[in-house]
Image (cartoon, rainbow over all chains, first blue to last red; front, top):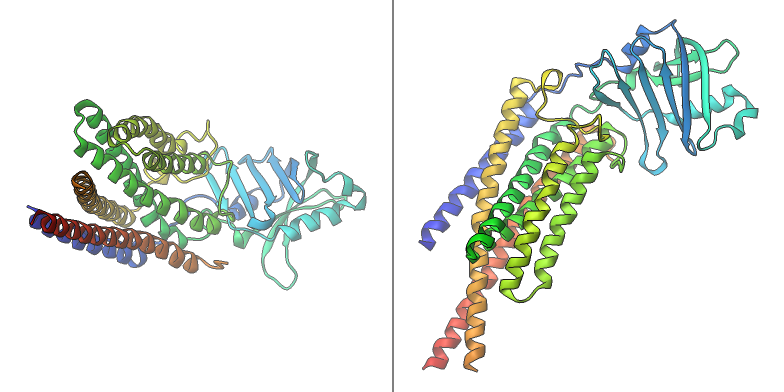
Length: 374
Length: 50
């Protein structure tokens, strides 16, 4: 029986490694680079070029200025922010023609923008640009060149009095500004899926243990939780690598998807810590089963947080999206294979981990026997 | 750091492989150590039995 299980384990390892290698190949060479499908900021600004606009905003932090671009045909709202250590990003939310999608653009040289703002608005405004200060300005959108010796074109709001506000460079704008980095998604999302699946198995194992008091379910529950933490760690470390490219920052504490996933990770770290803290086997299994059931609430919290973006602020992309956000067939196939690969890998790891848990118990039993004899 | 998309992709894929293989390696070593301990204890039990 043990031999059969070993053979099965080896076969599953080979299958999952082959599937993962296949995913790497498909992700890199087969899946197309994502197309924006959404207007770039440059397009939007081009469309309003010459229009009269009112820009209003507030200073959210020192060196950080948020502007809203009101009354435009697309009602776009731009936020400019300098996150100091994290780099800079510009985020835009278009409420009408962009179908309420959040989209982000590559970091732009905010220094030239804020510097331009300061100098163009005059030295007397130095005290105005402080945290919480409200600023607004009327003007006409005009295109210009942002950086000297560069062909990068930006847009300014020209008021006619010399108080121009520069919005940014067209060349840097777009929905997917780091399309290659988007291929991280083919491993990031399946990792997240595998972590949700693992914690689901922990939930089921915990419930079955409480019902039957059979320790085999407890073994499955904590083995699965341990594997779930591995997948969750992969998901929450690969996500920021993508975010840095796409958002300009590694992490955003105001994004509910990120925060709830981090909470999920901490909660399951707590699950393993709790088990480590209790030495009596029955009490350990009982208490952790209750914890394993209660902690599952963090899974739907994490999964749904980006789907209720109007209520909970999140610019995390929705993977299983409808209409405009749907994947191309090639990307869909790649992600499908990746999900299968990670599911097989999870099953492989679970079988192996449960086997180890059984061996550990056998070892403990032997130790007890020897202790009793002595 | 991570000046371009490709670097980010390599870093992320490395994290995935490192994470998965570290865990698989950890499980392998753990299994080996437990098997060794069990074998040793069984030998000890049989010796005491004699």
